[in-house]
Length: 92
Image (tube, rainbow, N blue to C red; front, side, top):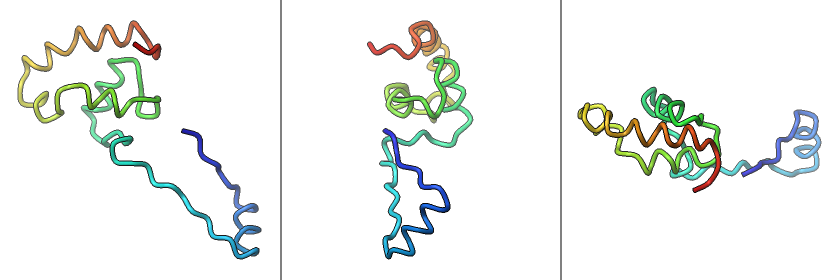
């Protein structure tokens, strides 16, 4: 999703004209948690927190708490992460 970024001068002019600046907050489901494990998983999949679909990708993986508590779940995830990395950002 692309957003309009107003520079300081544009903000000043808009406010002088009586217009307020409204910023659309991201939906919770579109946000990547600020968690080192989440960022490591995205990196292993060839993505970063700013990549399109990063939050959706994390939702498809086991919960972070499960991955922290269960080493077998984390090991089982590696083939999937490698496949995502090889596929890159291509859909499907």
